[in-house]
Amino acid sequence: MRTVKGGVTAPGGFEAAAAAAGIKYTGRTDMALIYSAAPCEAAGTFTTNVVKAAPVKWDRRVVDSGRKVHAVVVNSGIANACTGAEGWSYCEQSAKAASEILGIPEESVLLGSTGVIGQQLPMDRLTAGIRMLAGAKGDSVEKGNEAARAIMTTDTHEKECAVTAEIGGKTVTIGGMAKGSGMIHPNMCTMLAFLTTDAAITKEALQRALSRDVEDTFNMISVDGDTSTNDTLLVLANGLAGNPLIEYGTEDYQIFCEALHAVNECLAKQMAGDGEGATALLEVRVVGAESVRQAKTLAKSVVCSNLTKTAIAGHDANWGRILCAMGYSGAQFDPEKVDLFFESRAGKMQIIENGTAADYSEEKATEILSQPEVTVTADIRMGTAQATAWGCDLTHEYIAINADYRS
Image 1 (cartoon, rainbow, N blue to C red):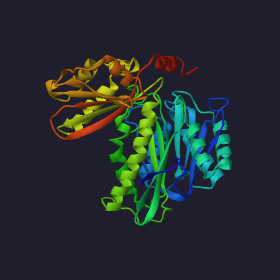
Image 2 (cartoon, helix red, strand yellow):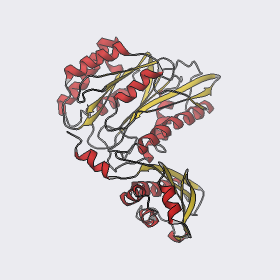
Image 3 (cartoon, rainbow, N blue to C red):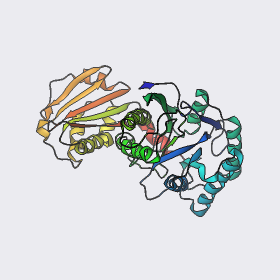
Image 4 (tube, rainbow, N blue to C red):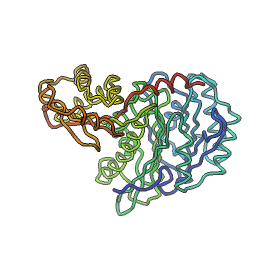
C-alpha cells in the first residue's frame, strides 16, 4: 500500500469541480461535484441523530435501493435540515437538475449539505451552481482539491487523502475528501466525507467494509460532543481498475479493507486536529485492556473530557483529569494498576505509575504538551486489547466561532 497525491480524483474515472454559487458565502466556492461517467456501486453510513437532514434521507434511500450512482452534489453554508417538505422537494429538484445537466438518471445522484440548520436553500443559485460544476469538472488533482475546499464551513484547511494497493494484479486506488471542524461527535462518521475508488467490488463487500471500518476511525473522534444532523459518509466504486471482482471475506477483500482504513483514519485525524479553535491534535491510546470495547470506551471518555481538553490547551500535565475521565466512562478497571504516558515530537515521559504520580519534570511535561500533536497512552494492564481515539484541545476560540456562527 502506498500513499499518493490527491483526493477524490486520484482513482481512475472520477472527475470533480467546485463553484461559487453564493448559497451563503461570498468571495469563495461553496458547491462541489464528484462525477463518474461509469456507473458506481455506492455504500454509505449516516447520522444516528433522530433529527436528520433532507439530503441524509435522500442518500439513504438511494444507497439502500442498490441503484448505481454517477454523481454527488454538495453545498456548504446551508444544511437543508429541519426544512420539512420543502427541504425534501429541494433534494428532488437538485437531483433532477443534475440529471438534466449531466445526462444521468435522477436516482443516480447523491447529495450533501452542510451549514446552518433551519434555513431553506436558494434553488435558483443551487441550480445555477450545478450548471457551473458540470462545465468545470475535470480529473486533475487540482480539481479534486478545489472540491475539497468548496465543502468547508469553519474548517481551516481542506482535507484529502489517497492510497494505492495491489489487488488481483491490478493497482487499485482509493481517494477521499472530508469536511468537519465543529459539531463532531459521531455515531457512524462525522459531518461530510466522500470516498471514491476504481476497485471492482460488490455492493455487499463495499458496504460491509465501510460499516466495519467506521467503528475504528470516524467513530473514534470527537471535537465537541455534538452529533450533527447531516453526518454522511459515502463511498463510490466504479470498477475501472480492472481487478477481479472483490467479494466479501476473500483475501482481496482484506487488502481493500486495509487501504480503506488508511484513507478513513487519515481523514478522521485531519478532522479531529482541525477542531474549531484547536491548536493540537489529541490522540488517546488505551492498551492492556481486556477487550476492544473496554479500550474504546476508556479512550473516548478521555478524548471527550472538556477538562482534559482544556488542560491540553494550557499545556498543563493535569493527569488527574485523565484518570477521572476514565473512572466515569462506565468501563471497569483497577485505577491502582494504571500507567500513563505523555508523548509528542518533544519526547515521551511517564506521568502515572500504578495509579499515582511518577517522578517527572513539570517543565518537560509542558514542553511535550506544547506540540501540535500530543499522544496520551494509558496502560490498564488487564489484557492485550487496545484502541485509539482522536480529538483536540478546547480553547476560547471555539466559543468565539460558535457564538457568531449564523452571522
